[in-house]
Length: 99
Image (cartoon, rainbow, N blue to C red; front, side, top):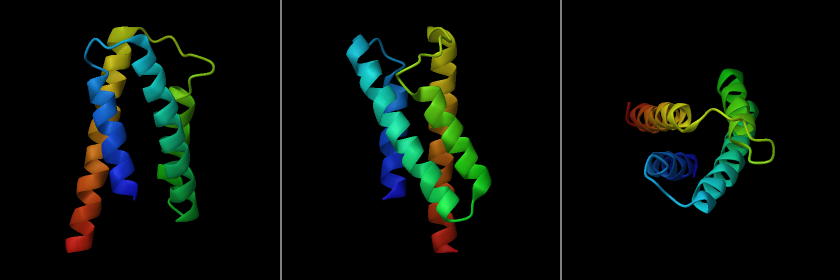
């Protein structure tokens, strides 16, 4: 389940690079906050505290209630970095299962 959540959020973050209606960005923020909160909890439960803290911070960064005004360009950079990090975690988790 975790790889699917990561993949969906990564794709949504990359779609945010396009010019979309404002409501789409709000939806992505809610989805990202929920997904990152779940992933944080799951990593803490698995005693992977560093990943748990990272995902907790991402949940706070993407939460839609108290907006963090980074500007469109900086948000695009954040979206790409987070999406690439999620893709990296997906690939490494599949490589660990194979090896």
